Length: 268
Image (cartoon, rainbow, N blue to C red; front, side, top):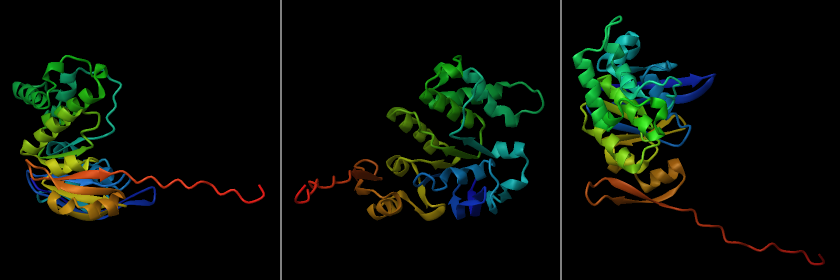
């Protein structure tokens, strides 16, 4: 299912956060949003999973304006993994993952065999099936992050939006989770801070700065030394990964300023 952000403007408390954002996410592709802190990435995602209503513009899923669908129908289409997901309720892992099936259940209907199979597969995909009986509050940050990814997958959405899904994950689990996203048939829009991970997993990358789309395209066209310097204010060299061909950045630390001894005025 195609996802299209069409000329989105977002203002919060009278302050413009996103300006005229248009971005296409082709069906089954992975598109990354990158940019400095405060550039509007998370705000754009919130419009897709309907935590925010844009001041202007439309979020299209296929030929449907997402704002015209019911919340239940929208939740069958779009699942979200957000940064703000704290919970004081000590669900077990399997109970939390099962919440992803809620949009598919009517009334007080219990999980059926199909629902349990979906949850089991989702937990296996992200490697938390061995934690099924554990309380969520006993988990590490990385374990909880993977459980939340399983809940989103259990929702069986056509579009999946994720805000910094690799937070708290070690390198192996970062690669594992992003590989699951890349290999799924789901349309994915993901916010990432790590430009090398974004280049490795994304079919296309959109770069935001001050709420505006600077550029978008394949990683090989977007990840350049000039763009990194302009948008992020850092120096980096771009090299080609020897196995995948993806662009990868080698960052240069700022050169320390030469130490100049203070001049003592004569007579002091």
